[in-house]
Every structure is written in structure tokens, then in C-alpha cells.
Length: 154
Image (tube, rainbow, N blue to C red; front, side, top):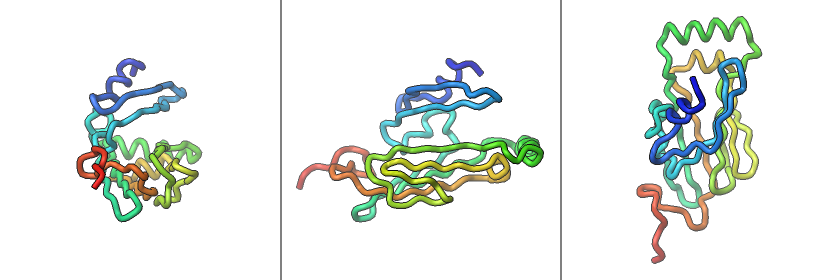
């Protein structure tokens, strides 16, 4: 894939690629910005990602379910490669949220408003879907989680 083709695949009217660079060995890193995380799947690369966001008192709860886009045969080839090379890393997903992270699942690294999930290539290849869950302090001027628009003063 070319950088321009990958940029198109990662972009939509709601998703903007801020940086994209190849890391070699068919790996890349991209930094993207989303106007509302619930619109992430409007970009072709994220069509298999389901996002839910809800507010629970003074916390926001964000859940991403990443459905594995590979067919069973492709996933088995990937799993075999991972078994032969156990040091190969799988996806690394990092989010910067609008406020301090309270908790995250799957042993994610948490620091301030940032959460990072890492997984092995084997774990990724064998999973039908990856469930990523994070709770963070609701921003003082939080938007309405149903509309994404700023809340009006009462």
C-alpha cells in the first residue's frame, strides 16, 4: 500500500489522519483525530470497529469492539507465523482522552489521559474480536454522549 492509499483508507469526513509513517515489515503507525469517537467506523479502515460511549455520573465509559477483519484461513496463516516468531507484536492501540483515565481492561497501560493496549500477534490472530474498555473522568464541559454536542447550561 502507498501512503496516499492508506491515508484515504484511514480517513473520512469525521476521521482525519494527522500523521502516517511506515515502520517496515508491513507495519505502520498512524495518528488520527476523530470529531466524535462514535464516528470512527465511517473510515474504511475502521468499518469493523463498534464504538459505544456513555456517561455514568462523573465518568465517561468508552467501549471499542474490534472485529477481526481477516478470514479464517488468513488468520491461521497469521497465527502460524506468530507461533514461529513469538516476539512479533500485534496491534498497539493508544487513545488520548479528554480527561484522566480511571480504568481500562486487558492490562492496558494508563497514564493521565492516555491509555495504551498492546497485544501479541498470536492473541490478535486468534481473536474473533477484541473488546477494549476504558473509563475516564467526565470533562467539566462534557458533551452530551447521545448527540456529541456541548451540553447547554440549565
